[in-house]
Image (cartoon, rainbow, N blue to C red; front, side, top):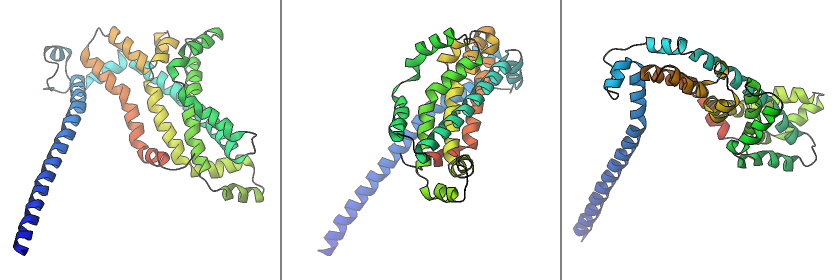
Length: 289
């Protein structure tokens, strides 16, 4: 009897092992297939950036026989890409600074100060999530045109700040809201000002959330295309996304240089995420609303 039981148990175990092996095989195959579909275009893009223009036209999918680093230098200088890059760096930096200052001060006021209807007001700001940036395009364009800011960096900065505040405020608010109230109360007993409590207690303790905001908003603002294409009409003032389109026309579709320019365009976002990835993860996994 025990022998039959052991045989059945062994059979079931063998079948379970076979099923588990097939499950892992197909799961691995699925993951590898998805990765291949995602990475293959990137490999072709990187490959084209190191090849000559004729080689790319003759065989777009081939790997480079020789490495041409001068494609990046030529894209940066002759294509005027350095102007687009510096414009984006200036606009995004100013936007992030304004966003952090306004959103963090507002979040501190909602959490620590006795603001009438503070929680309702906070929820109203966060409700801005429901309004996509594209829906605000025409009103923003009309306002910028009326106040004479079109074709200036401030048209993009003000528009970016306007529709980026809800997310920035939300993340900082929930981070501030998660701190123990005793920190601020103890500081007030010692006669510390509210501004000092904000800069010496709240900001250092919620730095991961601040950095998470920086990473998310930097990547989004750096790649924003609709506003940067329409609000700025002068080529010398364009940012990277809109500049790439002009860059393509200027170089008459020299795919090797265009590929090099795309890599230069996405490299800052990759570097920022890599440098602050730990802050990014911690900032999104702490706090409560």
